[in-house]
Image (cartoon, rainbow, N blue to C red):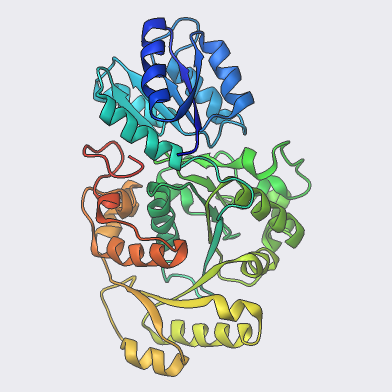
Length: 394
């Protein structure tokens, strides 16, 4: 087992030494910081594979350390484990909301701690030359559930031992905030003129969901000062720079394209490892899908396209066999209608984070296997945010 670096920020010197011995015995390289300010600096400068943070410390609380790490591009994707004597549910919720990836209360068994450490270390930022996958979900007809599928797919890949980012390209007004109950305080509109792009580019604009998923949102409403630029979407060069940056930081980048082949969507399609062309089982959607396939025919993109049929309503006007015959290719996955999706959207809690494995999530898990190239186990989907029993990424 190759050595992975763990930074422990804890003011109890005796506990620091005990954790150091335990982790070093199992192959981790351990860095100690008994002063919060020193620990914060080392986390940002050295970017360890995992950072363990106590909540109750002098000078700076553990919650404040987490917030400062997440506010800095260097710490936005660092795996963070809270290890604290505070065991109340409100403390756990506050830590996860601040940006922690996992929460354990003291005393904790060495087996539980090591299991969580292995999980988080496996989710560390991908290294150059590693496996980074870009998946684009596309439909040139709105209302077929592209955003629903993209959100749940990204959450499943985030909960596996990897890191995922969701990019929302719809330039007519984004819905990522609605699906994930996020306050969209930043979005890719900041990359459009006449705005001055932030120093860290796309990484400075990411919103962090409490699951750990990071989101590059679309502007929620048109900005009148940018209406001309926003209506054209992101320019090709800017989009390519965004994708290059995200692929350097995440194992999976999931792009929910808008219903138009603009420069940003075409740039994403040319870079994609997999293109999921989404349709609904009705005439207008089938017609639009056929036209899209004709537009992509003969291009390198065509070989990476797979059809996904989503049922946004309980009605089934067209049978799958007939659609496959008319489109001239098979439908890879059929996502059933799930009445719970309406409630999930209203609550801002996607079904992938629910306490049960819904029919919709089962089908999207098949998409995850196709997109990721690895098997997701049922245990990965067992619990939602803050649930007990530790599904991966909880």
